[in-house]
Image (cartoon, rainbow, N blue to C red):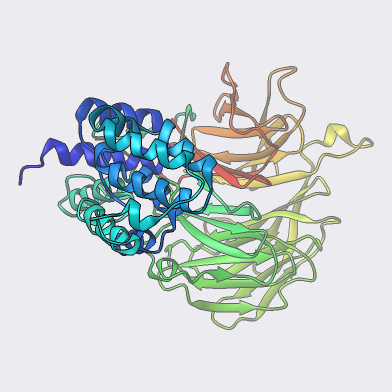
Length: 514
């Protein structure tokens, strides 16, 4: 099917009109000689003329872009009715300052002169004015029929709708891969560094945007890397495309407007290793697990903790949920039974993270008390209590923000403290090595994450600058990247690509890529 160039021009004109680009619209109409001649509703437009709603009519004809020469009869009739009402100011303005009346003045001077004479009369007899041309009502109907025949109604945003349909068809045909950012202008998929290497992010890939009254309190990537789940301070859990930052409408429950929801702010999130479930911990101490595909509840833990659930994680076999709370307690819950199976006590301040080791034999936890603890998961016995910043004993001990297992090294953990130093701690409780930000570049780190191949660790500072370290050597990169204009609360890395997402009390979640 061939598309006429005039049709393309009209699509562009509609886009310009809807985006209030009036100067560009007028230039295009002038150079192309093509107008869209559309109104919101033809029947309403015609009815407004018949009822003499002239303010609405004039706004509609301006919006429709009707050729000025076709508006002479309409403007003449409006002027006559305004004179009848003795509304002389608007009548003079329409006669002397509008293009249709200027066209009448030059092409039909006698007709124009009669209107000028009407303005000077003290009385007006419409029968004399409309002599031989019917009544006021019949003239309205005649003009309405004439203009209704040259205007039409089209759905809004036709250009964007057609482009969207085109992209959708190309995805269905396999021409464009699904779930990846596509550059419509250049006609190609944006390249993302493959999973065979870790590279620090250099560009903003996409942004997730929350409503003005909301902002995220937690986020997590799905194991497949397809989704980012966010938990908001309003208690909502939503799923977004990790590549585009758009809401994941392919999940039927989200497309229908149904959302997963907690009764209080969502403080922590985690996917099961299969990706079938997502678990959320709330500020009121409750935990709930959902089925990702259907949005239905899988299990509730209404009394998981006494205070905010700051950390949740699944066991390797997805049968247990490990949780940590601001009450300083760590617990293991059975996903099938819904019961609390084990409890770990020993931290003297709130828990900031808690994870199982890969073989599930140990639990590693961190706390605001400045310690990392390694527990025997079966007996809940504390095997090691590690103080990475032991040289600061006697001073204010920096809290530990998180401990994360290094991919490919299940017995080593990256430990981020609220200081300018990152530590590598072994499952034997020994500090293996540490690396720090360059002098004067960071007061303290606020969050850290490991890239998928386990070669680089990213840490964001109190100035929202992203620092990158080689895990093996501990050498920091020369340059830092400012990832946001506000203080970052947390971050997470994609499970297979060099992509990282951040959240704060801002309603935007920036997603950066290499």
